[in-house]
Every structure is written in structure tokens, then in C-alpha cells.
Amino acid sequence: GDSVTQMEGPVTLSEEAFLTINCTYTATGYPSLFWYVQYPGEGLQLLLKATKADDKGSNKGFEATYRKETTSFHLEKGSVQVSDSAVYFCALSPNQGAQKLVFGQGTRLTINP
Amino acid sequence: GAVVSQHPSWVICKSGTSVKIECRSLDFQATTMFWYRQFPKQSLMLMATSNEGSKATYEQGVEKDKFLINHASLTLSTLTVTSAHPEDSSFYICSAILLEQYFGPGTRLTVT
Image 1 (cartoon, helix red, strand yellow):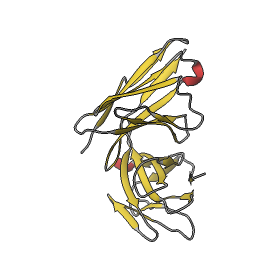
Image 2: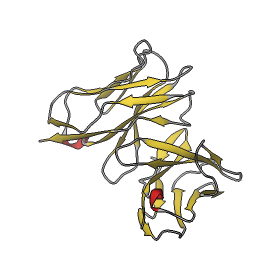
Image 3: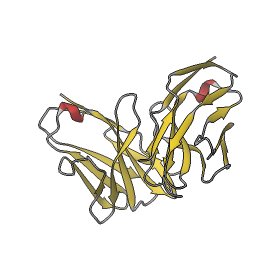
Image 4: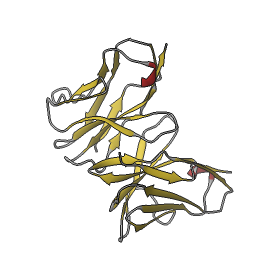
């Protein structure tokens, strides 16, 4: 079945460091790919998404490119801030909609000043 | 933006009792809501799809008689954990669809 594997955490970085959180997927067909973020005490929020190969999703300085050849959707940010501390989830939807999401296990990110 | 709330945010109940968790879309109507379960340090697992006015669709391996879902209105879905046992202790999260999924903050259930 469809699955998502993401980098185990926790990840701790200093402010202004470069961030990469790896995410790979297994799916039949052509899934849509998502990154969600969960800040402390809040619900998951959509951070960015990509619906087809080579698409790049971006938001709040974060980027991820849908790589079909490597079945990956790695999350990157050039310079992280303390406010980026959160749990990040990679997810896929087997179809073009946002229904029936399959999540990775989440990566806790802590940014120290 | 679209807001989804859950109530309660945490609950402790005794083994054998039932507990109801509410999921509300506060500023939009949602014909479809989802219920997820999250174990510590693990991903969210989809339990069921809640459809307004019809029976919920449960994922494989989820006991429908154990986890009763009622989507009584376009803004409210409830999950009732019946005859709860300690192994039902978990973090339950709902989401509602409005072009994309909007998630509630989750409910921590502890069964003693």
C-alpha cells in the first residue's frame, strides 16, 4: 500500500541554519504530496503541496520539490527561525484531492536562538 | 482561515466507560470529516471518514462498533469510544474538508 517515510527526529538546529527534512514515499499512480506543520497546542496546518512531478511547493521560506524519479519530497529552508520550531509531517494523497491522507511519522524540529 | 475545534482537549475516563469527542467546523460547512488516531512518536492513522447524513466509512482494522461516528450536521461530527480500555488511550485528531483538510487541535484520551 501507499506509505510515507520521513527523517526521524528530533532535529535541533541553531537559528539561521539550513534545514532539510527528508521524505520519501511509495505509491501507485500519481499522488499529491504535502507538508503539514503542527505548532505546540495547535492543529496541523498545510505548509505546502505539490500535485505533479517536478512541481515545487513553497511557503514561508520553506520549499519542497516533487521528485518522481527518486520518489522524494524533501523539505528545505535556507535560514530557520526560532518560530519554526514545530512538528513537521510529510503526507501523500493517492489522488489529486486532499482526501485520504497517508502521513509520515513526523519530525520534531527545535530551533535554538 | 477555516477553523476546526475539538472538545474536550483532554479526557480521562475509567475502563469500561464510554467517552464522546466532538469535532466542529467553526466557520464553514463540511460534508466530509475525518478521524485520525496518533500514537506517541508515530504518524496519524486514518480511522474513518465521516459523511454528513450517512454512515461513516471505516478503514480496515478499525472496529466500527467500538468507535461510533455520528455526523449529525454540516458542522459537527462526534466520535464515541465505547467500553474504553487502556489500549484505547491515544491522541485523536479530526479534520474537515474545505478544498483542503483543516485539522482540529486533537483530543488526548487516557483510559485508566
